[in-house]
Amino acid sequence: MDTKIKQIDENSLILAKDIILCGGVVGIPTETVYGIGANAFDTAAVESIFKIKGRPNDNPLIVHVHKDYDILTLVKDIPDYAKLLAKAFLPGPLTMVYKSRGKVSEAVSCGLDTLAIRIPSHEGAQNFLKFVNLPIAAPSANVSKHVSPTSAEHVFNDLNGKIELILDGGKCVGGIESTVLDCTGKIPVILRSGLITRDMIAQVAGDCREYVYKEGARALSPGMKYKHYSPNCRTLMFFHEEIEKAVKEYNDELAKGVKAYILCDDNTAKLINVENVLNLGSTDNEIASNLYSKLREGEKIAELIIAVAPEKQDGVMVGVMNRLSKACAQGK
Ligand code: AMP
Ligand code: MG
Image (cartoon, rainbow, N blue to C red; front, top):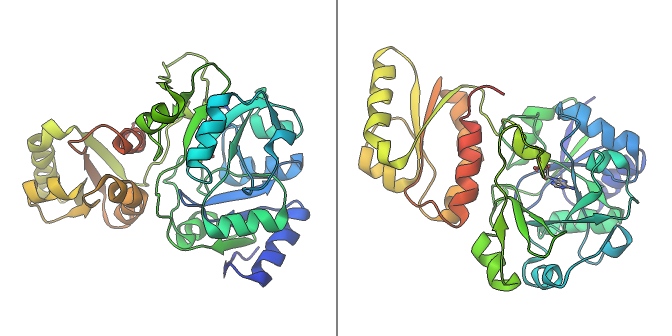
């Protein structure tokens, strides 16, 4: 199968809809990362997403809908705080988990009685979702465990020959996956951190907790169990207080003839002043936006990426640190 990359216009939308209605999958841009989407009502199509990615079959998918879609046909028991949050942040990088009505294929939620719903703000994503007018189950468009894609080219590099079409909506500005929020309880609980932060949610909803997964426990959001977001080269991670240790490691590896690069924010880059740097930029949003593209750039040129965590650890950096530590985790 030849994988085509097409700008989003009437012709490519017609092709995308044809593919979706025939049970195929399409690469789609969003404001966070690129996804591969299939008709959420079509079990075979949803199952093919897991096969294409090599995704573990207990890691549920998020359903994407356009902003005028009636989500009450898919989910129930939407609490008042969720309505306020939807008003404040949607369309946008916030996925909300509700009790499912069981209307979409069971393969979407991997047997959970909940359904994760997202309304992306990306114009191309909205046009596509409106045009197909179906709930689209879509995980990130990377091979499982690899770095998430933030451009059509990244998707092509991972999935060439495995999907028919990638809709090209440019570089993703957000850069890390949506915040996943459990809205089934009295208080919203963050299952995965992202650009919509705990403070932002608490300000609107009155309160917000963060779920911490403990190894071996039943995961509320199964995705949190897995090694993720990893480049195809060796990685190490150091805390900001360990800058000197990181630079020593870098110099030791260079002396051994290893092509080592330090991945860090602009402040750290100025402090350490070494030659091989993958610079993530300065502001929180820049760092999030560049994280995956720098990891993908790094795996092409480096044998070892030494990540140094940013000094700031709150707000959007919670999400960045979550991705960075998983990207650099050893083993499964
Ligand atoms: P990805 O599609 O790769 O961005 O990952 C989707 C994330 O959403 C994973 O961490 C899933 O575990 C999580 N997720 C999807 N559906 C649900 C659900 N019904 N309940 C809890 N977490 C979910
Ligand atoms: Mg993913």
